[in-house]
Length: 239
Image (cartoon, rainbow, N blue to C red; front, side, top):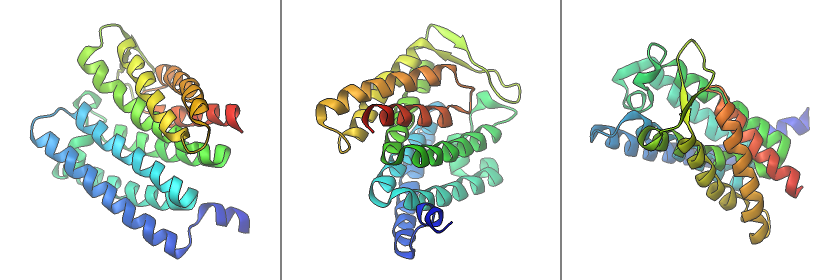
């Protein structure tokens, strides 16, 4: 029990530093996304600004403070998102996250990815240790690229299972973007955990698995599945 507590719960100093980092990250990303939305950028793009910033911030927290610091980061961030959902359209964060295509369940498709992100990150960290950062960046960067690329250039669409009866489609072009950008994210994540040549090659495998899993995952659940699949691939090749 004591060992599990040490794995999950930070020291007071770590909690303070990770909280500060979470606030800095959240304020910065929300400000950027809200500014973009105010300038007329559509929600598929503003949502991904937030997505990239949050996952990158979590990867940095995990690299510096391990899972305890990442937990603090996640709890504080989740609290801010929940408050935004409760306030609805009056909240600037809600306006950059709530997609019209998810009506009448816009809030559901903010809260479900939030929960699956937390579960996926925790599972990846507990199962693969330091390789969890691979899942953070493949999901945070690769998955973030898929939706806007698909919305702008997607021609070859396919339907995916969804929740609450809300229809969802993806495209081969979007999936290709998940793979390419995810490869970059995986390579960056692995750079400090493996030799440079290994980082690129194993990163390629992580991105391929992540893109394949994202392509077949339920709408709203891919933040969990992609994280676990990508970090698990890195762990299999390098542990």
